[in-house]
Length: 63
Image 1 (tube, rainbow, N blue to C red):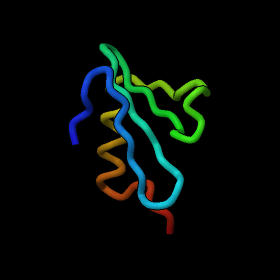
Image 2: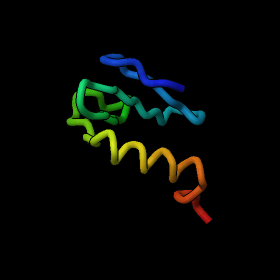
Image 3: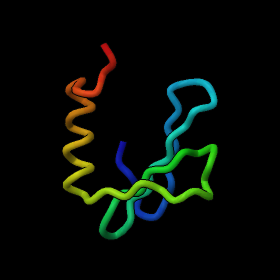
């Protein structure tokens, strides 16, 4: 999936826990969709690239 500039994208693995991601001009924001008023986590494009690559490789899978 490609993130669209300025648009929150929601991901839900099932249930009520959802994560939303937003791409801006110079960073990626991540928030809990159940608490959209709280400050999002901020990532540079480089940080986001490393994270998504690790996720695809299973680096963060729970044992």
